[in-house]
Image (cartoon, one colour):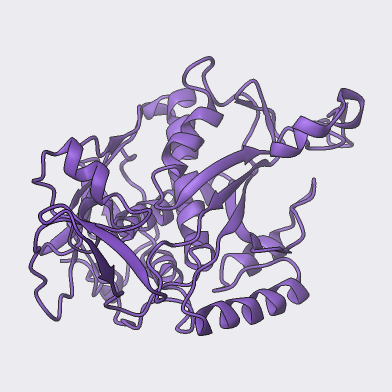
Length: 381
């Protein structure tokens, strides 16, 4: 399987949903960077979502760092992290049942019937665990460079939140990055929660969209034509289960706009920095950052595992069979996918900075003397 991504840092993921472990390895992350375990733990907690709209299993996702970190500091070796699966009841794979809108059929064809597809196998959303772990690691390093990554729920169903403007404040970034249902508008959040409750009562699911911004990234990052920042963001964002559409800046609305309506005119501000009066292009010109916030919207389809009656095809008997979701289904991916989108954007941004600066020219981070507790964190093996 092609489970490796990146040019300047390389991310690989491994394991199966019902296997003993799921994990990942990040190659070429700069050495000498403190690992902010508190930020990583918060990211993993946000990934779990709220108790009302996600799975019942609320036990902590405990990462075990097995390489690349010494006394809480990255040492230059590949960083490998493991997450041990909590499997209460062994699930035996009885034949191949093709579930609606899942990867069962394509996996059976591509891997000649040998793919372990229990609970989604290698296609499971569990693989966002190492992505969030490494994303929070990258996000913390980026923050030392003055670069912040933030996401919010842009829409669920027909309920839409406000969009990021040209200027995204520090207060807004901090607020959104700590919320389980991150929205700019409190009113939109209330309506979304009400909608999710009604969809959950019906045993159904619903789609949503997440808007992500990279704030503080200087101009000039991204390598045209085939290694543009847009293409790299899109390629890794599409690895998130359920992602079906990605747009930058004005996105799909460009198709209905005139050039005179969506012009980003350049000017020099009072500090002498070149900016644009609008940000229709989402901080990117021809795939290269222009110094404005890089803004993108990712659309997620409704999660196909629902409690309503469904049919599947048994490839052994060729019969259509009734399906039943064995666990409490997830109503919408957007709330728990918010931190995943931010993690993906953080990994891609660091990859672009490494491409532009070179490994040896990456900024150093002041290392504070660690306490005894910091040197032996409870999530590090």
